[in-house]
Image (cartoon, rainbow, N blue to C red; front, side, top):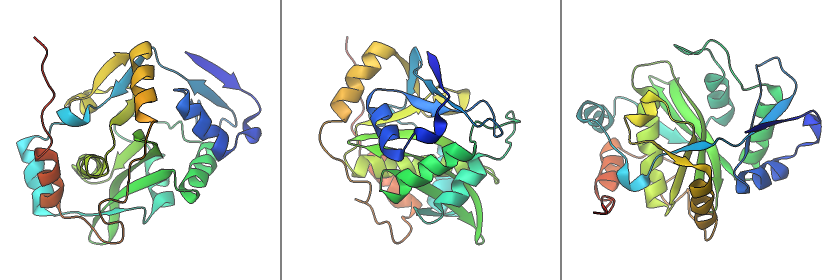
Length: 231
């Protein structure tokens, strides 16, 4: 379900947060489109935090620390990276207003970035919104192989350490499905969201000021009990 809002300039970061509590989020048709439209998918993408999967080859890359991973150190640069064309994605839905709104959320502590560096160059990352015990992943990018995947692994470790219970990916792609992403119907998602918005999580439970080693991130993920299978 989508609805267009012609009064884009009236939207504030605080209004955007309220939209997230209702299960909706904004997008734009293109980088040049000055308007936004609100989206509430019939099938919502999530990654169950207790079912997150890391392939063995990726785990070796994470553990090797060939990349340095930081948090909240280059937020604007991450958004710029996410707005770049990627393989299979020529355009972007991140227009100027989207960029302004999420920078505003970052400034009030409700948006975060994960940055992946190689030889002092930003080669990948992701950003998303933090609210209650929910994290809403917005976009990711990579300029080096596996860089965005490494960012996701570090994000999930941080969410688990900080007592988050919901990782919303909005939609499911083949890329996300390899990590365990699934689709849930809108009604079920709203129940999950209501639960996640109760209580508080701590995005800074793991250090913010210095990088977290890959082995530590994998250790946190491995220590998470698997989901209970109902017979």
